[in-house]
Length: 444
Image 1 (cartoon, rainbow, N blue to C red):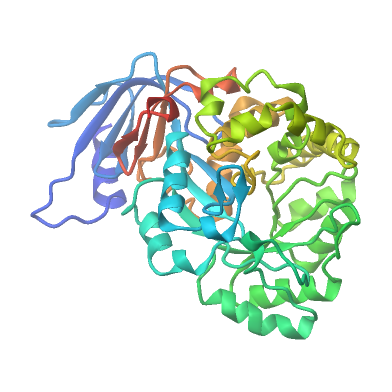
Image 2 (spheres, one colour):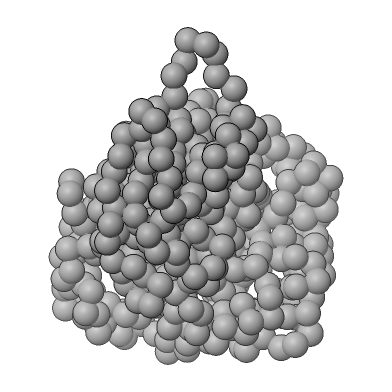
C-alpha cells in the first residue's frame, strides 16, 4: 500500500515547486462507486493530495491529512452531461438577450449544485464565451461546472430563426461548408453539432450532400461531429457518412441488427436524452416529483407556475404532436436497451437548458432514472453519466472515474444508488479539484 501511494504521488500528481505544499485530505470509510460499472466497495478510504486522487484502499493513513469521516456515506464521481444548453434560458423563455456572463455562470453553478462538474453545450453558444470565459471554467478558475462547447451549430436555411438560434450556420449547398467549418474551427469546439431532422414534416431536412460535407470537412480538421436526429433511416445514413455522436434517441422505430452492428463497429457514441421526450408529455400527468424540493430547486422563476397551470397542461394534451411524442418516448426506452446491450457506448446527455421545461440539474438525475426504467442497472446508468460521458468529451484521462491519479471531482451521497438510482438525489456535498464547493441544491 505504501508503494502504491508513493508511486501515485511521484507519477500521477502535477509537479510542485519547493514553495508549494499540497493539501492532504483523507476520506474515511465510505462506500465507493468508482464509475467503471464495478460493484460498490464498502469501507473504503480515499486519499486526496492537492486536486488529485492519490490513494484508494482500506485503512489508509497519511501524516498531516485532514480526515473526513464518511462512514455510512457513498462517494461517486461527479456527473458529466454531454448535451446541454447554457445561457439562453431565463424565466419561462429562451432568447439571445439572456446570454450574459452572469446568467451563464449562474447556470453553471446550478449544474454544480446537482453534482455535475462538466457540461457540453451542443451548438448554441455565442461569441461571449470564447474570449476567455469557457477556458476559465475548464481551468477551474470560475465557479460552477466546466463548460465545453460545440461552437456554432449547423442547421438548414431559415429566414426567421428564433433569436436564441440566430447564430447557427445554415449552408444552402455543400460548396459553402468548408469555409463555414473553418469559421467554427477557430473557436476550438469539442465537437461540431448539426441538426438533421424535419420535426415530423414541419421543417426542411438537411440535404445529404450538406451533412456529408460537414462530417468530411470537420474530420479533416480533427473535429468530431454530433447530430440531432429522430429517425432510424437518418441515423443509418449519417453513420455511413462517418457520424461520431448521435445526440438524441432514435425514436421513430426500433433499431435493427444492421444499424446496431454499424454503431458498434464504428465506435459511435449514443446520447439518448430520454428526458427530452418524457418532458414533452409528462407534465399533463402531474408527475410525483413535480412538488419535490429537489425538482423545484432547479426551476427558473415562473416555470413551476407555468407547468402546473391548467392552460399549459391542456395545450400539451391537445397538441397535434402529443401522440407522436408519447410514442417516441416509449420507443426511445426500447432503443436505449438494445443499443446498450449491443455494447455501444451510451453517454449521459439531456438537452437541459434548451427550454424551461428541460430544467438544469434535476434533469440529469431524472435521466438516470429513465435509463434504469429502460433496463440498465443503476451502476450501468452511472457509468454512462461518468466514465462514458467523459469519453464523449475526451476528458477521460482526468475525469469520469475515481482512480489514482485522476482529478478529485466527487459527489458525496447520503444513500447508496447501487440498488436505487433515485439515491443520487441524496447529495450532501460536491467536491471539485479536491475541495468542497457545494452542499447540493437544497442547501442554497
